[in-house]
Each structure stands twice: as structure tokens, then as C-alpha cells.
Image 1 (cartoon, helix red, strand yellow):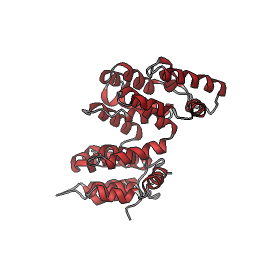
Image 2 (cartoon, rainbow, N blue to C red):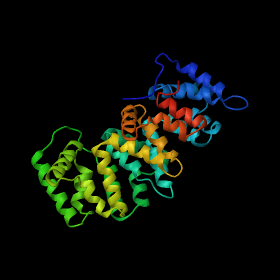
Image 3 (cartoon, helix red, strand yellow):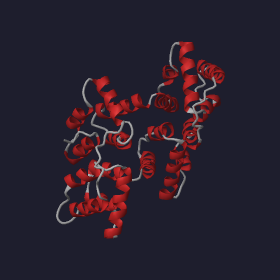
Image 4 (cartoon, rainbow, N blue to C red):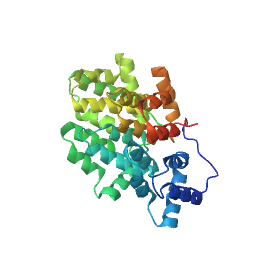
Length: 314
């Protein structure tokens, strides 16, 4: 369930005019920016951008990028992009970090449909004049490269059909590879990167039933290996995206100094999808509402914007 509270009868021309006024003169009216953009869905925001361009011959995204600053600017910038373009930006940012965040690629491959992932890759090529696959390949190596490129390259089957016999046989293949400590076995890569999500879940469930322990627990035997850690994260994200995103938020807040980039990524990308369920999971796991934690751990217009996307700005 989405968390944003939208205004259904909003008029794009009026919104564009109000945003122009918010950016006009000395200082920016950040509260007006939040009041409008945090309460418009993706379709409405696209129409506002188009109206702003038509009315003022100016790119609204670039205007706001110039007017705002810091974590607030980055959050508004990413929120205001089309979803595919936003994910392309997130992927590129992840590659340019000193400590690359491979979770972005895992999230794209695990939570998007094949068509949505294709749109992200097309947006990436349009924006950066390179393919997402070649950029990942040039910034990674060895087994990690094979895993990440495989995850974003495949067009997974979307059907609900499950072959239980196949699930059983492939769970045995996974177990044999793990017992032999060959975590980089080509069959592990093949199964994780190519099987449909229902088929993969059936395989992982059979693995757990047979061995009394999830595959991710067995992969912890090699926790210091970057490839194995990424493989484990991939399985967790595919198996239970809600718990996965809750943990990303929890770690972002519990780290020494809030990881605003990770916190912003989850809230901005999930606010129109399943953020309400993620918030419920967070409350259940941590015994405190997420909005209270954000109120405590963030500040200023950035805090107000995040709270608005959570539906808690009243």
C-alpha cells in the first residue's frame, strides 16, 4: 500500500505556477514545494513538469536542483523524476560511490517486472550513453560481476507456474554446491539469475524444508566474501522484499550517523507502492513508528519532505 496522500483534483497549470512562484525572488519557498510535489503521484508530477516546460520554457527538475540543496534537494530531485529515470540515476550513483552499493542493482532485479527493468536500462542508456550492464561490468570483477550483470540482464518469466520436481532437483544442486563450499558454482548463478520468482521461491522453500535452515544461513559461513554477501542479499530481497526494505531502513538509521542516501532511496522508491506495509514491519520489528524515528534522526525541510511521503505531515 502507498503512503502518499494525493490531491485528486489538482490542476497541473496551477501547480506549475505555484512552483514558479516558490522559486522566484529571494529565497525559495520550500514548504510550498513540499506541499505540492509530496502530494502528487507520478502521473501528476509528469504533467506538472510538462506544464512548467510549456509555460516557462524551463526544466522544472533542473530549476529545483538549482534552488534546493543537500539531502532535501537529492530527495526532491529523485522523487520528481519518472520512475525508470529515477532508478537509472540511483544505479549510476551506486556505481560512482567510493564504496559501491550493490543493493541498488539487487533491488532493481528483484522488485521490478521484466518490462520495468527494461525501461530502466533504456533510461540509463539515454541518460549516460552506455548500457547499465557494461557499466556494472566495468566497475566489478570475477564472480561478483557475473552475478550482478546476470541479475540485470535477464528477462525473467513472469508466470505463476511452479515445477515442484524441478524445485526439488535444483534445491539439491544448491545444497551440493554449498556443502562443497563452491558458492560461486555456475549452477548457483544460473538458478538465482534465471528462474522465475515463484519457481525460485519453491526451490528455496524446498531447500529449507529439507535441511531445516535457509540457504542464506548457510551462506553466512562465507560472510566476509563480497560476492557471497551480495548473493545472500539477493536471495533475501527476492524472498521477502518487505523485510528486506525494513532492514535497509533500520540499518540506515542505526548506522553511525544516518545513511540519508539509503533512507531516501527506500522512501522515494516505495512511497507509491508498499511503503505502508514496510512501515508496519518496521514498527513491529523495532517497537517504534518509523515517522517518529525520522522526526528524531533527520531535520529541516528534508525531514518534512520525508514525513510527507510517509503520509505523516499533518
